[in-house]
Length: 559
Image 1: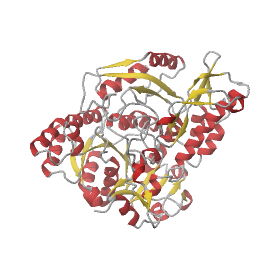
Image 2: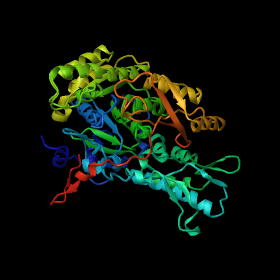
Image 3: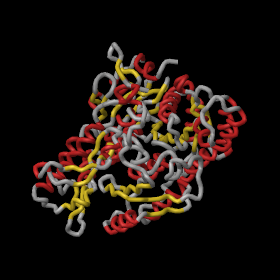
Image 4: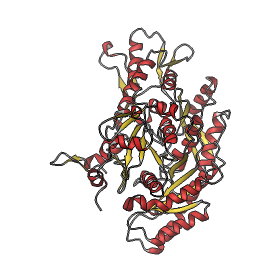
């Protein structure tokens, strides 16, 4: 089989105006960016306000391994499979961050015969949204330091500046830095750092803003620093930055329209990570997709404990969305990994089957998490070369015994939409089931209770330990009137706990919360658990080592 990049490069794409017309968009609602991608005007929401909303399918997964389990491949396969069985789906996806593309993850547009295209554009600069978000973020950072230099009219305490700069790259050397060196013309020296753009509050705001007015209001509420005078918050509005930041972002707020290999529409917009941010595509992309199709298929990052919990507790809360079903993506390889056996063909049959029996504890835990929210779950076994029929059938049987509504193979990577048709049938049936969707906690619950609800009922923790800095922040945020905010947990994605080495379904552990950030513009609190950092680093052999151009100028090595 050809590589995913070769398949994407050789595929004959449909002009984006044709995709837009098929999905019911008017010419004046579409702004082409070249031949195969476009921005969609939010005016479509007013025109189609009376159209019934589509059913929402959330793609999530078991606890991932570093190899990846193929949630995007499953999302695209399911979208294409829904097309095969005669439905009208719209996929909703996050934009790819350059950092992970050149880091561990590689390309982020699916794979094989289940891809979103144009693949190279999607994985690199796309329509410039992430660059605009970084520019807006860094404008505020520059205006903070300029304000301090020019008389400090807001009495900003340099030791209490929470706003950090952002860059769309994995760069650990920028986690902690000193700015303002070189004398007074360059400002006053102070410690600060960079976050990756996907983890920035501006990205979070973009992903939940309803419209341009809402975006402007949220940006104005950003807490950039605190003053000497009683610790008063200093906002982006106080600093005079909110208007210019909004101008930088006004085009980026419009969701992007692209296509699958089989011509289904895909809304691709915003790219927050699920371990250090809320991990879902933009709310406006969901809102537009819900008016254009009869099913929207949206992906939440990492496992159900990460992106799905945040989709249900934050995105659905803000957007008043009610999901109809969740698809839990699994692979035989990942289940074996959690069962203590590596993906090695030399492992004999008995050991492999036993590892699946053991590793299924992780799948059962994730099915229980989905059940906690009252949504039916369909298990998708994302098939890989080398998986035996016996292994796949064992996963399906054990999934049904664990309470899944259905369990089906996704063979879309090798076969395209036809390989996911059975999965699509199962998802349609699941969406027709009675639904008791609810959030995990109420707005009025104290901050401690919200954190502990997630830690105990989702992660399976026995207890939560708060570092003194975290306790101080909880007391401060409660005094500041932020206690009704939802919480957006930041922790490792490689374990249900905060320790990436605790695999499968750990029990009797304590979740450590070392600090909490207030995203007053986005409207939530971010507890930092364990050693999680908001700026990843490149590994010893990053994916960037494989990326190059060939003699004809084509990209190679972008998987």
